[in-house]
Amino acid sequence: MPSEIDFLKVGDGERSGDAIALRFWDQAQPGTQTVVVLDGGTKESGAELVSHITTHYKTSVVNAVICTHSDADHASGLTEVLENLEVKHLLMHLPWNHVADIEENLKKASATDKVRQHFRKSLENAHELENLAKKKGIPIVEPFSDKIPPNNVFTILGPSTTFYENLLKSFRCVEELEMKDRFWAEVLATLAKTADKAITWLDETWGVETLAEPAADDCSAENNSSVILLFSHAGRKFLFTSDAGVPALTEAAAYAETLGIDLKTLTGIQIPHHGSKHNVGPQILDRIVGPKLNDANANTTKSAIVSAAKEGAPKHPSRRVVNAFKRRGARVIATQGNTILHRSADAPEREGWSNATPLPFYDKVEE
Image (cartoon, rainbow, N blue to C red):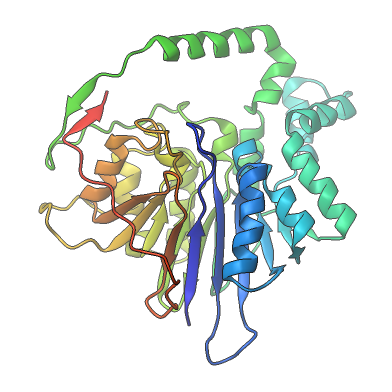
């Protein structure tokens, strides 16, 4: 029962994004192929997804499209998929349908329409996707862990409805309603500080890990609202994390444990947020990847794939993060301008495709 997961390259510059397609099928039963798309990157990578699916999957039918969250580098390309392929279902969050609690906290109970309209404007990628799905008659389901029960192939580990609605209070568009001037002043100051900061390098060895636990606010509410999805098929398990940070990953790990799922037995994992050091720390990696190995030459037990722009280093991916995954027995592979195929051993080989070169262990990491 083969499976294939394709991480397509997104963009040619420094900005990273996610555009992922997967399929699985039963070779003994022709016509059983299931195709799923997770995020579409930019409009350009969305078009590449369409071409990739029709060329390599030999179909124009996509059983499900999942928009993990509404950032442009994840959502905008999905309109190309909906426009050009036959999509059976769309899974995406509709934040404007969850504004009642926000209105109460902002003391704007009489301004429902204003808040909803502001959400729509601020999250225009998601709104465009919703409108296109409605136009084409594609059913929309909100992917919450407490609303969609797990099955033997897909399990939504996060977010839960409550977790998501609590995050909405900290979405940028909500903060803009209350403190627009202060919010943007802080954003500009942060950008200026980042631009002026020169990269300095630290020494790392296998036994010395410098990856720190991220601060509670290191990952935005929007990123923590990302869908976290476990794909299980024929004894293999792959965890898709999108841009989730430690709070979201912690909730997902806790839910997995209640289901009797040990994430440390994963055969593959998507490194969160293009390999940013703000999204993972040693504790959550010990929990979802496994403990650090004593021997640098030990056999790798899983693959860790990062969607990173061709010119995204050293931020995407962070060398600290790469080393941390490698210490925990993962073979780290980055897109960096290439499409990466993660396939089961029984999947057919693709003519002209070659093995990807894993990232090395770095003895110098960014501060």
